Structures are given as structure tokens and as C-alpha cells.
Image (cartoon, rainbow, N blue to C red; front, side, top):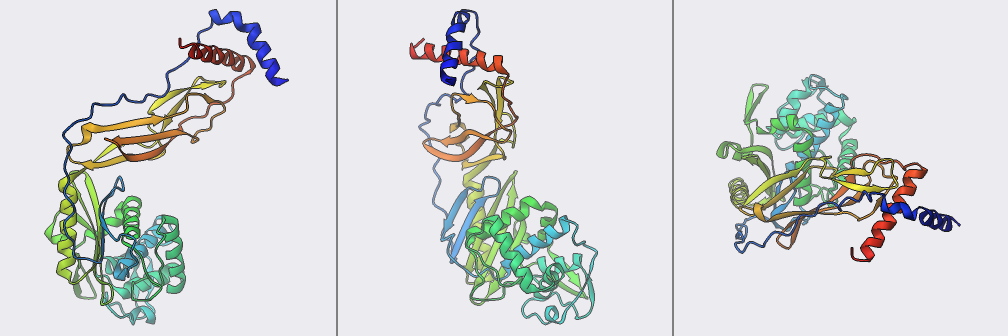
Length: 404
């Protein structure tokens, strides 16, 4: 019955078609294909890296520029402290703890083997100093003291670590302790460490600033950051070293040059010198042969699309997050963004609703694929607005079927 009434209304109003503007808008703009440039930038294979596993990614786009066994299970050693630091940053940001809070040092923290800040049992140490002792000096004692202060015990803190890992998408990681001391059930991968590094830098840039500090003195003892790249390359500002006999020498490094930030993960080299040289080779390779460009900001209006039977005739469309691309140097002129949106959109439409897909192409390769969302609500129109749109749409469909 509803379909019959709809067709009757259309027939009754058919004469009005001669006087009604169709109000059609073109489909969302899809850029015309660019002529294929014959000159294609040539990128050599990554350098040979003497490590059990490695990964090089762009910070903004997340693009993988070089990798070997990025999902291989490995021991993280003191790279674990990146997660401890990440959780402490969350607690500080939420106001649950403060940098000036005094932490009473437990016997367990004081007795921790391995690298130390040299805190003393029973003493009260500010969170600020413990963070520097963990980040700069890689102190296991400072790390356990922080874990106990945040969660009551290191065991409960390890549960928090695994919950945060799951939330971040670190699907091949499991933590048993806050320090990275060896345990068969304490493991991660190069890819998961890169995920953690991106989150740490993106979410807590002020906290991340501490990772470039080269020296820290506590209790009359001066220690130097084990990340020697901080001295060798001024573009490097982090992140963390790790070493145990079973894990080998590891380094997660990050550097920023001319607005482009890269993150390298090198795991299981045979010496401190090697983890530095191999990380440097990866970073230099990425900066030499690739470039990163911002394309669109989150919620930037990219196009307006026609909406039928709505209180308003159009909806603004954009992406829910910033869009970056990382490409071989010299290829930016060949990048083609394309929007795929259904020809007909009908109200109601809710803000944030996915309406299509953005694809960014380089030659025949999809660089980026992101959802396109509505940037505003479009409510259903009234009876006469909906009726008029039905007439317009029917007329448009008739003209299209006739090839007019």
C-alpha cells in the first residue's frame, strides 16, 4: 500500500517535473586519473642488518619501510620499561599520581639485580627522580619502585601492562614484570614495540622529552644514557636500550629530520656497538629514500555530497583521523586520492557515520585506505520535502536510464 501511494503521488505531481529543479549534485569528486609518469623513483633494498629481528616505520603514517621477522617472538629486556613509562605517564596525566609525590622504597626495589639508580631502602624518593632513574639510567630498582607505587605490587602492575598492551593492539606481547628481567612468559615482537613507541610519542610528547636526556645524577652517582645515538646523531631523541645475555643488545630509536619522524626497532645484536650502528643504518636509509606528507586533517571537510529526503540537501564528508602518506622520494606528483561514496545517500545520517572510503593510490598500489564519515547530522525532512526529493530522484533516474 505504501509503494502504491508513493507512485500515485509521483504520477499526480508528474506535470510539476517541468518546473522542478532536480537539485542533483555531482557524486563526490573523484580526481581524474593522472597520466602515468614513466620515471618511477627507484628505492634500493634496505641495508643488511645484523640483528635477530628489525623494523623501520614512519611515525605519522605507520608505513613499514624495512623489516625482517617483525612478528618473531623475542625477549624485550629493558625495552619493557617503555611500557612501564607509558603507564606512569597515563597515571600522571590522569592526576592519580604527581611528579612531586614521595615514594617509599621497598626492600624488593632496593634489592633488584641488574642496572640500578642506587636508591636506598626506606628512603622517600620523588616520582620525578624515579622516572629519570628508569628512563636515563635504566634502573631496575627505580622501575619496581614506580610499579609498586602505581599498582601496589609489581605483579598487579604486570596485569596493567598486559591490559594496556591489549588496548594498543600489541597482540604478540605478554609481560610478567616491569623491568624486563628474563622470564619464559615475558615476550614481545619488533612490531609490537613499534606500536608502543608510536603511542608513547603521540600521546605523551612532554613525557617523551625525558628520553633525550643524556645524563642523570642521583645520590652522588652520575650515569649516562645507554642510547649512544643521542651523542652521534642530533636528530635522535630516544628511545630505549635493552640487554640481557639471552636477548642480546636491543634498541628502539626515534629520530626527526625536516618534520619527518622515523622509529627503528633493532633486536638481538651481538654488542652495544652493533645495536647503535645497525639502528643508524636503518634510520639513514629511511630518511634518504622516503618522504612523508600530510594529506588531510581529522574532520577536515573534503567534499559535500547530495542527501535525499533530508532536512538539508548536503552532508559534509571527511576522515576521522589525520591522513599521512610515506612514499619514495620524488613520487609525490604521482599520488592520487580517490573517494568512493555511494551515488545516493538518504537521510537520516548521523555525524560520524561511515559513508564511504578514501583511497590514496601511487601508481597501481593503495598507500592508504581510510573511512569517510559524515561531519554533521542530517535529519529526515518533512512530508513535502521528502515528496519533492522522491520526484526529483525519480526524474533523475528516468533521465539517466534514457541516457540523457
